[in-house]
Length: 201
Length: 272
Image (cartoon, rainbow over all chains, first blue to last red; front, side, top):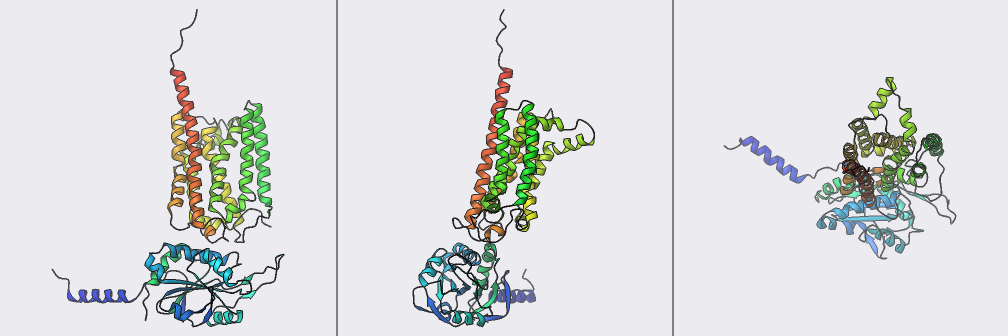
């Protein structure tokens, strides 16, 4: 016995639709409208200019602003994303890029940035630029600029107030979700495969 | 003022912190234990048992106070596991051992007090209560909600210690006595009453991602990652817990078989 024709048609349409649209991420804050992948060039840890839009186009890209002397949010955020990326199949790992832009260029020299990122993943990209350049980039993305706090430590150490969110750009070159601090590894593990399914436009 | 160790979210510092609530709780425990343990000594309790009890009081103190207390409250699941072992499995039996004689004498012999004592020290009830406490205080949602507050962290510590006292009472304190609760049943009781904590330890060992948000999102501990810390916590609960439980069951077994053999051993004929 064959299924009725309208049912067959409906099933085919549903199949086509499900193949076109990727499942929506379950965590983070939805960005409406989505943020387009920005175009900017900063210096990468090997000293060469890094054209963000060109280097990451079509790739799942995590963009995070922070600083290496950050005592809590930055290391936890980077470590959590790294821990989950490391558990992905190799092919999926190759489709993702993590970009860390320092909000403290005064202390984060390129070697310091590289050494810090290497604790988490040797493939993570570290970028450094003039603080006004970084702040205007953050403004362009709708992220509040960083604020350098007063020196509190005996050696003049200071903290840098900065947005604690990860902006994730998918293959369609848009960021649909912003992940705030507090996103757990289990949340990333649920969402990253979904984000990887977003197709290029 | 920080009265009790709780998850603060601040980076860890080796600068000692003072927790007045912990000191107050320890004063209460020290005074209560001191009075009861002295009575126990007067009733013939050995010097070894007496000092073991004081060592257990010291262990309770070190697990609640700086540095283990705050580490367990907001930084390391492994420190929290160590705290659970100390508060629930190691200190209560030693404290009860040193005070068992005055405690047994204090159990009412009639009336409602007797009924309450009979109910709470009934091994099945005690085992169920201990396991309910163990499960409830290890549920991630409960831990993540309670540990950031001083009252919540205090509640967990108090529940562990009270749960430990309830668990060990039927084994250590001779009153209320139950004829059916002999050595083989006691061994089975200890084995089954501590199975749940072994199960929780197994879950911690095999989980792919950190279970507890407070430890995962805490300012990082340089030595190990949150998942390594969780595996260590599971290992501590599993191995150290098993060492305590099976160590005691082994002692109970040899005492029992020794006693049985002694009772059944053929007696020498009386000499004229």
